[in-house]
Length: 110
Length: 340
Image (cartoon, rainbow over all chains, first blue to last red; front, side, top):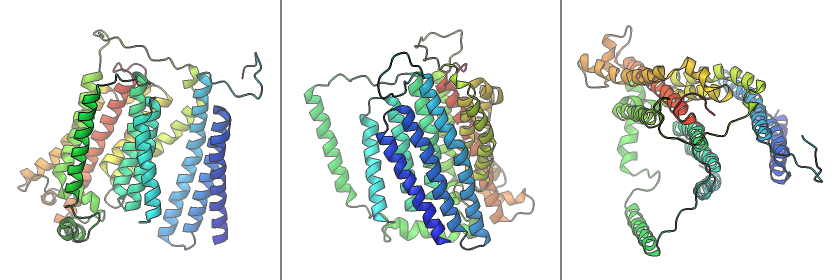
């Protein structure tokens, strides 16, 4: 049980780290949003899932209540975070942010 | 308290505060200020002040960031470079600030230290609340009982302050179409992207849960962190989410300007009315224990609990209405036609 919890939380941390690196290193707006949106959602899911599982190590009413609340947070993050990413990316697309290309080519619209 | 966490969060708070002042772009400043509020919220949680943290998260980081962004969007984003003052006035200002700081530092030495168990507040005031709250009011959450019962006057006037702030925003910003004297530049038109199906669908799914959670926060404020202010702000935020993902007209058709002002009034009136009810029943203003005379099946102690619930509901209604009214006016130049 504890091993699973540790694995989930460490995996979440690894993905968070990858998110941060991606956010800092990627070349343009869209790829940064790609890193932020996906990595953030996944790592939050993993870490909160690990915490919820940790609550279940002792089964009684109080711990189940806390675990279910954490799982509800997971559900709402799973709904809200990709939507927010989509909204930001969409706003960027609408206001005409050009995607990054390795070599500047003419006449290629996204 | 773990001092490493405290130190790192506190230094981030200071960095964010400086960044908020230094950044020239007001939109960035608003967002950094939101980050600052979230860090403060972490700090409050870490100190064990969960109610304050909740308020900071919902009011400071949530709604005020939206209001700042709406205001920056409708006015101007970039701070113009300020004209340089004369050197002498700068020196005078610096001197005044340094002298004032030294005086404050000198006075600070006479205050009891942070969390000092021997300070008067820890010796007399806090133990009273800690030992008497449950026996006096049957409310496990001490913060709620202190806010809504022992110091009910304070909270009543806080509600009145919020109500007045809403009135001030309406009075300053609201403009009727015909009498539109002051010409402001039209905001940049947002293209068709705002009619996004995904965003609309998800916000439509989230809004009922947000409102349910807000009601839970209001009703459960006796037992867990939360209460009227936080619940009201979350209720208002759910309407703001609708206004952002759809348009202002949808929100106005549900919460019109008249309804908002009415609800703001009603909320403050509920609070003050419960106070006057206590006066009529022959006790002091906001002394809820006499409410047991009119409430069925309650003794003096449970009456205080129910009285608190009543005023929390009043606070929530007032805060919700005022938050919506402020957002509607800020985001549409006070014209209430189209917003962000």
